[in-house]
Image (tube, rainbow, N blue to C red; front, side, top):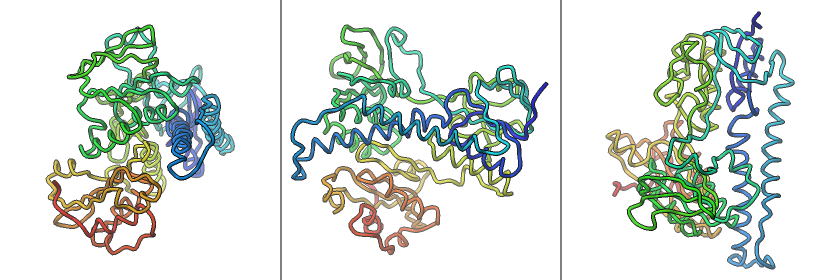
Length: 459
């Protein structure tokens, strides 16, 4: 016999628990099913532990630079990886426990542990239990993509998840993948003291960014001693006495990189392959992502998909915004759409990259005629005062309407300062409105009005 609920949520990632909260507040009974850890990727293997590790790596980096600021630390900087890992585990564990305690105290919400599979469009099986509801929300997240690459099954290769379980410092970490996850781990472990080489199949890093951003990021990381092997057209793996040999088949340089450890960071894939979606008739695309409408509805009435598994965003903030869209439409009579949100994200190297909206390349593809305001961090007082004057800031403006189309801030506090542009865009502001707005001195964001008044045609 089935157990009936008003709603079933599959997955307790960033969208699942708050959605359960809204639904139960509305008087609905909810079954929230989680087969592993409450909190999903962000809390357990993503944002929370990695940014905690990045903070430790930043402390080590600043300690080594203490003399630059007239400070003596009294000897070489030493890294205690056991304490570093314990700190990250504690922060992550506390966050997970907070979510678990919240759910436990949530009236009319049952947190069920187990692997959920569809039996039909209204039925979910969890072990021996059969759950039934007229509303089902899929929030199963994603995992590291591990494609079939030559020799990969012959060596022990790390992913972002297994990397967090590592308790020793690699002698030489080879990072396969030159985008967000790979570069964050690369800088982090270089600052912990490992030799680091990044292998990237393409000709430049973070390929969807503008070339000047890619070049600036590479310059920053090379300045810290990270080596790069780009144009690695045929990547392979083989066991080696020192650990692992990564074949790179680059146009120049040695044909392989020998490392003690290898981290595979070449993308993510959705956790949709073992949900029985075919039994519910839910459509997925060729990459396994659940196909959803602008309101995050699947092709089956009464079933929604939120978070990383729907291919509409791969970030914690997009997942949470998915929850807000679904809850507002379902419970508040709103008409919110995914297409209304302004894409924004960050790359957490140090200094961080903050991005919002269109960059120059994307604007050109959409046939905009644009003007650009730009300033290097060497001309930003706050960055110079902190001796962190790497990178630049830039806004992209529609030459006709003067609307701000997007922005890039690669520099100290770039992940925070970018919100000034995000909020302006959300309010429909123009470059002139930004130029006339007074900002605080000394900050990084105070130069945004300045560059809004110095617009020129892009190079």
